[in-house]
Length: 208
Image (cartoon, one colour):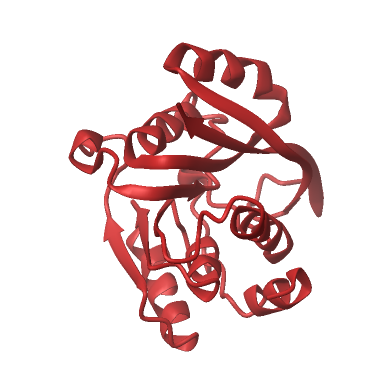
């Protein structure tokens, strides 16, 4: 599947109806989701036939894209029942059966129970702003426990050095696959501008 086809396919995925600020619910744009998945699939062969986890899956754009690209099974995990309801509807609309949903708090589950259970983990985690300081690193730690092979994740470019140091401490290899501009639409009342561009790194973490 060509990148453009994948992006236009993902434009059919419904996003949050009433995003929750405390959960930092910002949609992953079809463009960014398609670029991530296309790279994971074509450069690293980490989707087709693989068991994939999507942490903080929201309405499921990364899971649905993985399913379309032939994942063996994609498991979406999210704390928010409303988001998972939209995800379920999206999966039905796409007539996709190779996805599974789990409602859970990633910061509270015993990640050891999921240790090395997934070939690939993909995520667009909360960036850990305002009320959620350090949330991005909690997600990353959970993802690295759960993945057998690799974790693919989006993080603010401004946190790159900090994440690189953590990856080194944890004994994993970090690669910057791309620098992206995350166009954040005004989703909440306190947003003054129509949209804001945030510099974001698309990172791959591989286990030694």
